[in-house]
Every structure is written in C-alpha cells, then in structure tokens.
Image 1: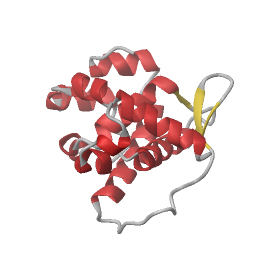
Image 2: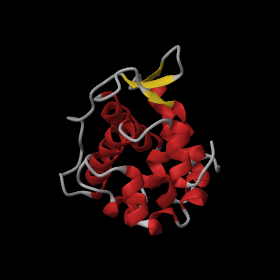
Image 3: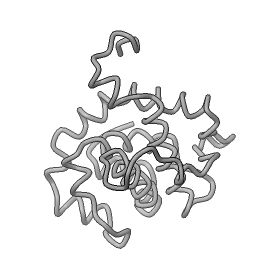
Image 4: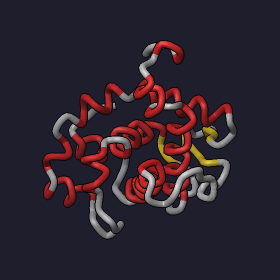
Length: 163
C-alpha cells in the first residue's frame, strides 16, 4: 500500500482511513444489535469489499429475512471478482480498524471480538441520499445480516474465500 501522500486522490478519498473506520464501526454496531459480544475479526474483511463495490451494494437485500446463502444462489454474479477485491482491500480494512482503534470507536475484546464503542449513527456530514450515507446504511445492514448468517467459516465458504 502506498504511503498516504503518494496515493492518487481517488484512492485517498475512497479509502480514507476515517471513512473506512466509520463504515467498519457502523457494521460492528449493526452486528452487536444481535450479538452483543461483538463481531469476529475475520468478518470485518468482508465489509469494505461489499459496501464500497457499488454493483454489489445495490444488489444487497432490503430485509434481514433474506438469507445470505439464498441470496448468493440467486445472485451468483456478486461472487465474480469478490475474492480478488476482498484480498486487495485487506490493507485498507486494517488501516480503517487501526484508525477506529485509535479514535476509540472500535475496541477488541479479550476474546478477539470487535465492538463498537460509540454509536456513530448520528454522525453524518452527508445527506441521506449521498453515496457515502448509503454506504453507511448498507454497512450497518451488513453487520446485522452477518450476525444472522452463521459462523465465520460458513460465511467465508459461502463467499468462496478463505481467511
């Protein structure tokens, strides 16, 4: 990963560590709505590739009633290129997590779970229709959805990836 000052503007803006930390915190908070103990660390690496990829983000279901495995079977196109995208976004996820840890919006429990320390739902610089606001909404949904989707290994297998 390039140092901050050498990143192209588009990359620096889209993968801004503060914005990535905000998306991750939203997702972790969504997960905690159903599993108070926190989100397993490996699931955090699914959030940015699903939230920031507009085509996938637009296809995400509107309801938690849609099961992940059923949705993936009905939308096989979302797995095309997903493994590569997830692998490429690992450094940005780590950078976002580090930013969130430093900003005290994310903590890691003794059990290795990620917990959101602050409710950042009201923190917004954007209108509800701005793409960044939509990313935040989908990120929170993803956290809630993943909390209902099984254990980490099952979810990774469904996406066709490995930790």
